[in-house]
Structures are given as structure tokens and as C-alpha cells.
Image (cartoon, rainbow, N blue to C red; front, top):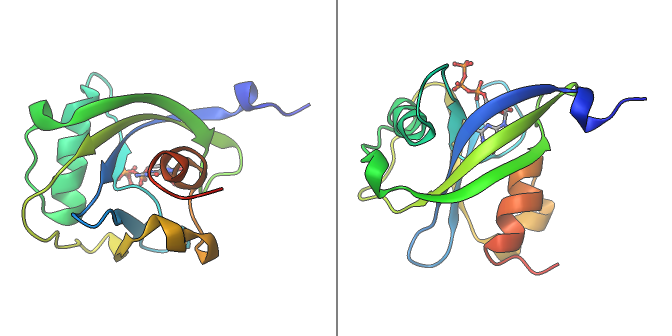
Length: 138
Ligand SMILES: Nc1nc2c([nH]c(=O)n2[C@@H]2O[C@H](COP(=O)(O)OP(=O)(O)OP(=O)(O)O)[C@@H](O)[C@H]2O)c(=O)[nH]1
């Protein structure tokens, strides 16, 4: 029997970023089809908020002080791109100044109104954890 507990764990730090009108910033990484929270893997020994700041700088050219990111908690979800894995995500809420500039590894960046998310291909962490908390009606 395959259960979540047997699947590989990917530890990530991920960002919930909203603009003034409540739209959520999502990214689609190059060569993939699902939109997801900006962020990425936590390196061994790296503090989650530091990993988050590093990933946001690499992916979106955003400079974030890790101390200003508000930790929402740890959440588990099936991994978007690996059928045999799940993510353990440290989710952080933060506000950003200025417009992000996607790096080459980001194929697409969008500001998504939560009410308009139903037609989108979303990572489970975004669909099941973030959107229910940030405005999408069931
Ligand atoms: N950033 C991010 N990754 C997610 C989310 N949901 C989810 O399943 N993942 C998965 O978590 C993993 C993140 O790894 P990544 O490869 O994007 O991170 P990274 O930038 O550290 O990449 P690298 O290993 O190529 O250096 C991917 O397998 C990705 O599909 C999410 O909401 N945000």
C-alpha cells in the first residue's frame, strides 16, 4: 500500500505574497505546468526564513529581510511534480516592495485573484492549503 508516510519528503520554504487587492503571487517554474507559491528547497542547516529570502532573491529578484517574514506554520501536501513525494512546507506571509522580476528559472509569474483560481492548474499546497485560507470560496 502506498501512503503519504512512505513517500519522499521535500522540505521547502514558500511565500504567501498578496497585493493590495488580495491577489496572490504565484509562479510557474520552467518546464512545469502547475502554478505554485514562490520558494524552494531548504538547504541542510539553513533556517527556513533564510531559505525563503534566498529563493525569492534567486527567482524574483526580491530582497526580503527574513526577520520580516511571518511564519504561518508547517504544512504537508503532495508534491506538484513528483508523484512519489510530498512537500513539508514552511509557509511565510510577507509583503514586498516593488514589482518582482522573474529570473530565467521562472517561466511565468502571475498575480491571481483567489476567486479566479478554479480553472488553473495549481500545486496541491496552493490549492488545498493556501487558497482556502486566502479567500477562495469552496
Ligand atoms: N516553491 C514551491 N515548490 C513547491 C510547491 N508545491 C510543491 O509541490 N513544490 C515542489 O517542491 C519542490 C521545490 O523544489 P524546486 O526545485 O522548485 O526548488 P529549488 O529552487 O530549490 O530547486 P533546485 O533543487 O533545482 O535548486 C519542487 O519539486 C516543487 O514542485 C510550492 O507551492 N512552492
